[in-house]
Length: 313
Image 1: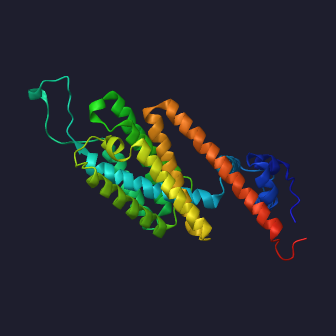
Image 2: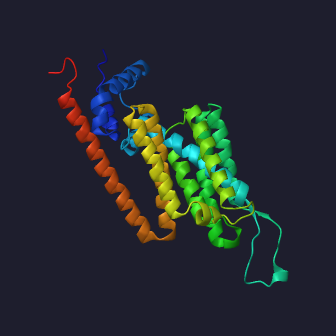
Image 3: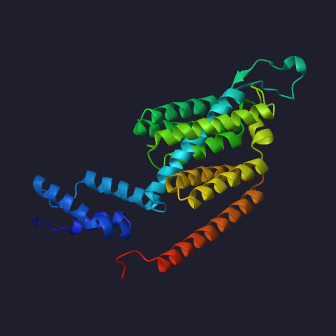
């Protein structure tokens, strides 16, 4: 048993939240002390302190959501994001940039590439890496896609004609950040969701006669309008509820993750066009979520009281 004074290590472990230290603190402390004793050290090294601070901060930031839920949300975000990125690249990645300040003879009628294609390409690379099982490399590509989205957004402010519209880059960037919440390892679920979502969006583009070369906001003004996006999110929530009723818990959790992603997209859609409406939509979504969680907890409590588990006191 080690005789090293554990005070410096306990102070370093304060980077983690108290709840985490109560569950894992002693085990982590024992490992650190054993390693220090083997190396003849009586205090944490600089590298250990930095690593503990970094991982403790990550636990604090991500502690608001259980890991299984983060994995579901990350998977749903990756699948939905790549579908939107593909639709943008196919239908709006190349478009005619018309400057109405110039006379007709001064216009360039040729299709020109959008800077947003960089983010869309990184999205495609990230998703291929996910399907190949390279979760770490996929997260690097997703981080690059979010940075490219921010860059395209800034460039669009400098040269509005170059596009893409802000709502495109904001949506893809937010989904990339959500996909970074956890490694995406549910490859089958991610691939199936991406295929279904892409198929639905492709059908809607054709149904609403949105041809290739359309402006990057065409999908939002003609396909994913505020009303339709909200309707789509609500329909997916209903599917999640039905899966929960039939006790398909794994399916219900994943479908709920997809519904959450579309709810976020709906809120982005509202906020980008009207901040007040977006804030109102967020308040409504939070209120409905709070009521839903309250009902679920009340039902679970009633079930445990009515049908107590065997061996329970």
